[in-house]
Length: 122
Length: 109
Image 1 (cartoon, rainbow over the protein chains, first blue to last red):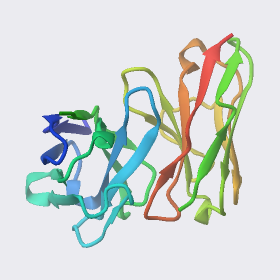
Image 2 (cartoon, rainbow over the protein chains, first blue to last red):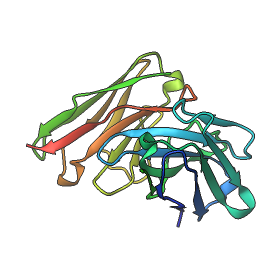
Image 3 (cartoon, chains in turn cyan, purple):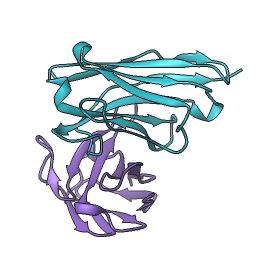
C-alpha cells in the first residue's frame, strides 16, 4: 500500500524550531518529487516547499523562504522540513504529498499523508 | 505568482443535480497543468483531475474537468451524497510557487 506518514509536529514558541518528517512506503521513493502543503484548520491549502527526486532542485513559498529547509534521504525513504524562526502564522496541519514518477516537485499531488499539526504559540 | 480564484464560494444543490465549479487564473496556466481536489472534513485532499481533464484512477466518470489558458471548470454531472465536500483547484505549470484556489464548498440544499 502506498503510504505517507508525517511526524514531528507539536507546540513551539514563536522564534523556535521544529523538524517534520515524512516516512514513505509502498513505492520507489527516489522516483518521485515531493512537497509539503499546509492547511490552517478550516481554511484553504498552501503549498510550502518542494524537492525533486535527488534533492538537486528545491522551491519555497515566499512566506517561508529563508526560514524553512526541505531535504530528503532516499536511503531512508524519508522527506524532511526543517522549520526555523517559527511564527504564529505558521500554525497549521502540514501534509507531505507526492506527484507522478520522473517529475520534479511541480506536479499534481496523487498521494497525501494525513498530516502533522504544528502550533506556534507563547 | 499565479493567483487562482474559485467561484462560487458555496454551491447549494440537491442530490442528482449538476454542479459546475469555476477556477480562474490570473495568467495562463502552462501546459494545462491544472488539478482538482476533493476534501472532506478530517481527511486529506484527494486528487480528482489532473492535466485539466484527466481523471485519476478510481474517480467516477460523473466528475469531469475542462478548460485551458486561464479558465477551468470542474463538473459533477449528478451529485451523489458522498460528493458534498470542499473542492480546490491547483496550478503546477508555473513554480515556485505552486498555488491553490480558495476552494468551493458544495453543500446540500
